[in-house]
Image (cartoon, rainbow, N blue to C red; front, side, top):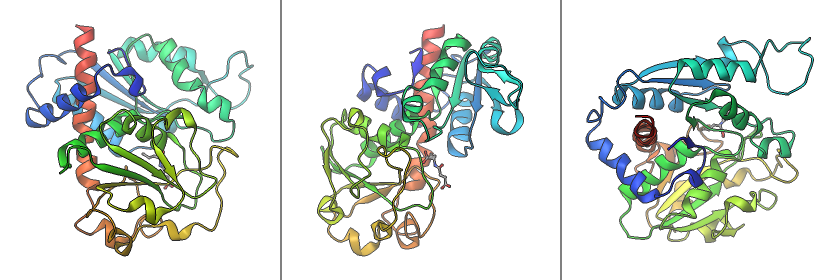
Length: 316
Ligand code: SN0
C-alpha cells in the first residue's frame, strides 16, 4: 500500500480489520519490518489520539518516529501556486513536502478543511499536493473530507464487540456550537457502506452529507425511529454540506440521553473524540456502561499499525 487516504485505497477491508486484530494480540511481532525506517507525522491542525496512536503504532513496528506540529512549530505554509509570497506565509508546500520526503520513508499528514470553499476542500488540494511533492507513501491523519484511520478503528471496534453477525449501526448527528468538518461522518459512512452492517444515518434536515459517501445507507430525519433496535450508535456533529460549512440553531434536543437508548438493542455508544460533554453527549451516557469511546480510541493504535505494516511491506 502506497497511499491510505480513503476506503478506496484498501483492496480487502475485512483482511485489514483482521490484521489490526491480529496486531492487537501480537503488538511487537513485526519489529524487524520497521527497523531503520522513519515515520514522519506532520500536523497542520491539533491532535491527541491520532498523534499518539500513530506514533505508538510506528514504535510497535520498530520504526523511528518524528512529529512536526507544523501549525504551531513550523513555518507558515503557502499552499497556493503562483503567488508572490510577500505576506505572512514563509515556505511553499512544494519545498516543505519535498524536504520532509527526504527525511521520512512514510509520512502521515493532517490537513483540515477551511469550510469556506467547498470545491477547494472537496478537491483535497492540500493533501494531494503534499502527496505529489513528498514522493513517499502517505497516510491520511484526517484530510479535508475523510478520516480513514478513525473509520478503520471504528470498524475494528464493531467487528470486535458485535454480538450479531450483521449489526445495526446508526450514525446520529449531535449538537455543537462550532462548524465542524464532514470528514469523520463522510469517512465513517463510506466504510460502513462497504462493511457487512445494516447502516442508517439520521440527522436534522439541512445536514445532508455529500451523496458520494453515503451510497447504500438508509438516511432519515427521525432520530427515535432510526435508533430502534440499534446495536451501535455513532455520535458525531458536522456542519452542512449545502450551504457549505453552515450550522443552524434549534437542534439542541438531538443530544442522546439514557431515555433515548431504551428503544435500542442495548446499543453501544461510539464517538471519535474529542467530545464536548453535555453538548454533543450527556455525562450519563459517557460515564455509563454503554459507552465504548475509550475502547474505540485504544483501537486507533491497531488500525494505524495495520496500515503502516502494509506500507512497510511495500517498501521493503
Ligand atoms: C475534529 C472533527 O473533524 O470533527 C476532529 C475529530 C477527530 N473535531 C474538532 O475539530 C472538535 C473541535 C471542537 O471545538 O470541539
